[in-house]
Length: 150
Image 1 (cartoon, rainbow, N blue to C red):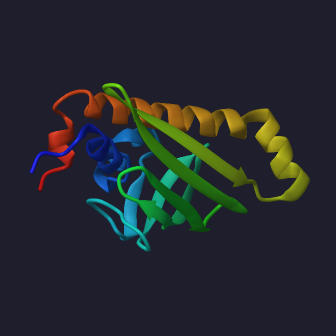
Image 2 (cartoon, rainbow, N blue to C red; image 1 turned 180 degrees about the vertical axis):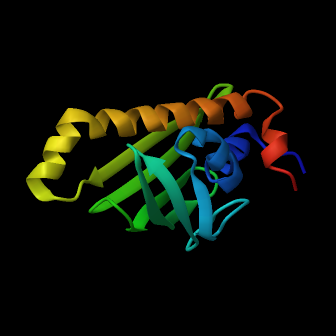
C-alpha cells in the first residue's frame, strides 16, 4: 500500500531515527523508552543531548494523537518547568502544511524568564527551524525511504 504525502510527513515528524539526524548539532541520542522507529500515543522517549553547552536528559511522552493530522508530545522530566509541542498537518493542493505550536516554561522563575528574553526563545526557535528543514528535505526527496523502512 502506497503512503500519501501527509502520512509520509507525519511519520517523518514522529520518527526517532530522523530526529537523531535532524538534531546532530546537539548530539541527541534516544537512551530510554522508544529509541528508534515511530513513536505513538502513550509512548515515551528519553533524550540525552547537549544544549547551550550543558548535557541534559529530557523525557517526552506522546499525549495526543490523531493519525495523520495531529500529535502532541509533552515533557515528563527535564530541564524545563514544562513544555508541550503540538504538531498539526493539513494538505493544501499538492503541499503538506505543518504547523508547530511549542509552548514551554523555563525553570528558575524570574531568571528563567530573563534567559528566555536574552537567548532561550531564539535558541529554541532556531532549533525547531533547523529540525523542520531536515524533515522537509527528507519529505521532498526519496530520502524518506531511508528512515521509514517497513
